[in-house]
Image 1 (cartoon, rainbow, N blue to C red):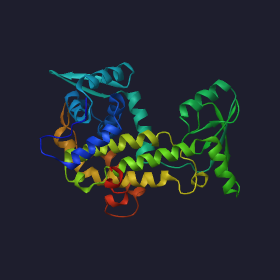
Image 2: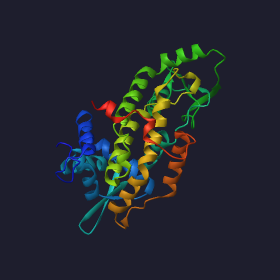
Image 3: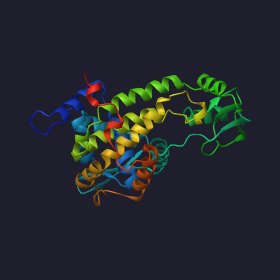
Image 4: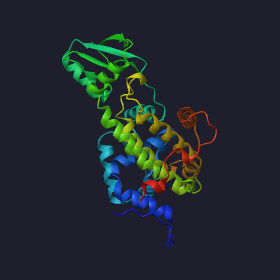
Length: 314
């Protein structure tokens, strides 16, 4: 199914640009549904009518069949649970999935780099493997029982933690970080995100609620694919001119610029079993406050902080 963002037959350069973008970066149904729930549904603590979910996905080339198949798999995996009201089906995150989504939201919307380092020792090597796997790249094995990572969040269960700091040798610290974490590949991924986001850097999107919501979902979808892989190392361990800094500021700026129109579209068109979804919640306000800090101290958010879309769509 090809993307079709038009609602009529009139030529529209914004629709055409988004459609062209999606031909180069096609979406997978299950992953995009996770993005929708993380960005739209979870911070409102609500369910979503599957008809609205189908409506959000259809213009982006995801068919009703693909949506229903993906939702069935998410239910089977214990991430979603459904309820019926009359002839309508509504789906919400399970309690376990909601905890995972909250952790992911922290990494996407309110990240915090590690404050120093922690050295971890595990009595049981198998526990070390489990902890490293669960950390999703944030900590790395030094041998069968020792691991190293940024001092951020709670340490893994069953680990003996040693606080560590690097002496004044910044070049060696960056060399160590490059040898243990795939920072070069991650930097390229952040740069690719900036190239993708540049295509959404059009002030006209913020003036059209339906397209603002579509653009914001794409923005989050592309950014989360990189942000959830970022170990968030202490800043002095990162390469000079680290693309992640620009990417996070650009994401925050563009997200905020799109959100007023996107949230009005959500309140006007999406619903759970009780009625329309709210436009703003305390969780969303906290999200916007965190993003404002990332974007900078400016009080207005402009699209010209990113490269012009025309430079990327030649």
